[in-house]
Amino acid sequence: MSRKYEPNPKHKWPKGFGSLCPKKLDLTEAQTLLDRAVSVATVSTTKLWSVQGEWCFCAHPSGEDVWHGFPVVGAEVDERVWKALEQAGLVTKAVRRKLAKQRTLPGDWP
Image (cartoon, rainbow, N blue to C red; front, side, top):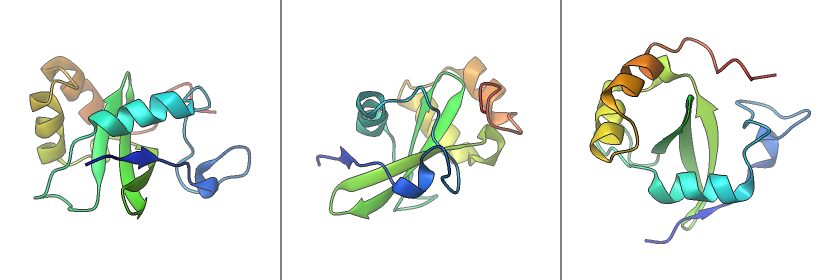
């Protein structure tokens, strides 16, 4: 299955709504996150998850094999998702524990 990332205009700076993506995240990086994202059917059949640095991301479908994503607070990510991310090699056990304790989006959040 080929996934294509398309940004959702409501999640963009400067006046977007919802979880705005980090300003440093370009379209190539977003596509890479989507390409390696994991699905956890026991949590949701319509969401994908990925991690980059201290950021956790969730992606939703926008159409046929088209997705948009946004950052989520690590503490709000289901433990089954963290296990799947670790099994996929996207996060180490130590980083998983650290991010799972995250109560707000990372410090470079404007």
